[in-house]
Image (tube, rainbow, N blue to C red):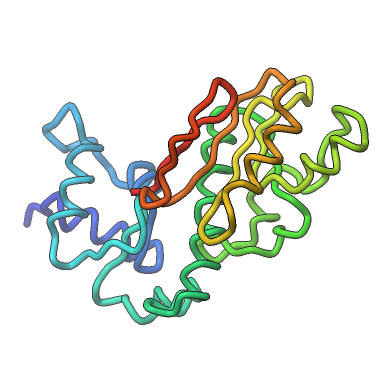
Length: 211
């Protein structure tokens, strides 16, 4: 019986997913039972980075070269089209934050105006817990919180983490939102490209950079 290589297993898994998969998803669906390694996740990372049959769409998101056209159409992503890439990126990073929050067993929120944004072919409303923000504070402050791109709530429906995804708009807008919310026992993050790095680190705002 022919032995299937690790690379072939990863490629087969991506084919079953429609030609693309996140790194997280690959670690869920690839059968590591016969891999002679204590760090299969590191092996998967090496495979997707080194194989000429796989290309990188975005950090953490990979696709098969043979499926390039179909995958990009399915994701409604036009490489080189600034508007298309910005729209995709915003939904993609919001979706990743939702997935991470759910993994941490926190309640995830995205604004109602973003519910139809796409994350890997699905609407954000399909993967997030709610687009109706819990009434955790006064209405005047809640109006500001409602516009934050992603919020994680704890079991008491109090906000634990606020995330703003920034690509083109003025980061000062996000800082203004966070300033209004700084009295809550929560952490604040701006998700932005490394090229937009700023020296604005404070005890209530952290900058999370996209490679």
